[in-house]
Image 1 (cartoon, rainbow, N blue to C red):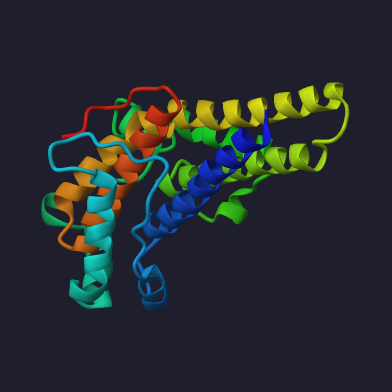
Image 2 (image 1 turned 180 degrees about the vertical axis):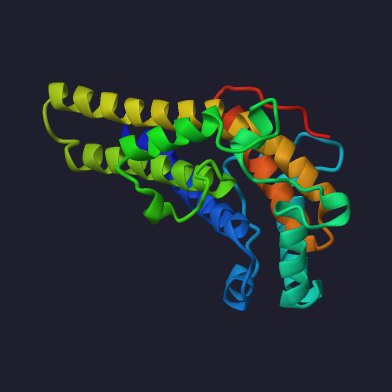
Length: 241
């Protein structure tokens, strides 16, 4: 891998780490004033962006909704109520976009099924404990976003090791290239076998239930980033409505 390729790859995975950390925070619990203030104007060019409808760039539409929410959405208590209605199912008819992989993939709309066991296994393998993640059950959407950031950082670490050893012999360079490829494969496999399989559907339901631009924006952003990410890596995702 040459220097130009390495730099381009590092930019992509640094963006991935940043955007998934942002999404993990947005979906983990209600927003506080500090988080809303820190959002500022977060729209920026994304290496994951793909135009997939006649309205233009859906990722930028999501950023626009989030930015608008900072000045137009109601009080923090109303945002908290929206979070509870959407993700805890305390809204009309007690329906919700419950943010757990088991709920969407078990076939029974129940919790702590096979995807939950798989997430626990992945967390253990990566040396991450439930107390570090602090979300229960552990197949919460924010856990999966945190894992995507974690795997992104592993790619970045492999790239940095290769950069430091770029003047070493060809055998060492080949080993470093294999390390980068392995880290990328781990990232890709997790994205495709877990978030891609259910996050877009959850986000569609969350968008439909949301009463605020804040959660409309983050629901659209999460869906589009996951699908665009998979597309950039050569996989096709659900068709955007």
